[in-house]
Length: 294
Image (cartoon, rainbow, N blue to C red; front, side, top):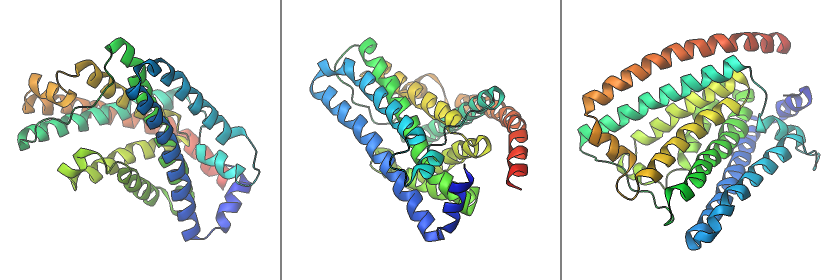
């Protein structure tokens, strides 16, 4: 982030910084997800539109990211936009260790959650609704759904919200506020009604994973890859299994809760090793940033 932008944010009061972070992040999330939702609605109503959904949304994401990072018009707010989009380059070591750490941690948590649903008698999740077409036609759209979630939500919540709050209040409050607002954007999902206390905690846990990666690398690129990869894998599995069953029901049919916990334990061990490697990979950049700030 440039010194000019830091000075500008330094002049903002605490309330002003909070409002700026929440409003900017919310606008990006609403616009990005809204455009994707509109394209999906068009595809649902007319399956002939489906082949055009992926290139159209790809163009939206590329143009949007380019505007936020490079376009200087209007000049007012340019430094804030550029800092908020947070698309900085990262080292190969930081990138690949963040992928290993993020995915293994999420897999561990996912399997523990599925085991919890089995033991609590909650069963599987609700079926996702897809256009009536073959999986081959559906797969590009499912992959794009994961990419949209990763790009839009990371830029909105880990970029503009967390990044702005982080510079003013520190990393812990920034992750807590942006994580809870991220959860609030998903309140319309059915699983919140089933377990209204558990799901905000799950979102905060995932926000801690993604927020730590963004904080340590000062970039959204690794977090986007982690977020998009996990979501895309779930959507592709859901599309492949539909309309016969859903991913959680499928896992419950082939694994017992003790087996899920055992595999989750292995994933947790991989996660611990990966996080240690990630912190080592980002230690040098963090030290250099601290010296530069000093």
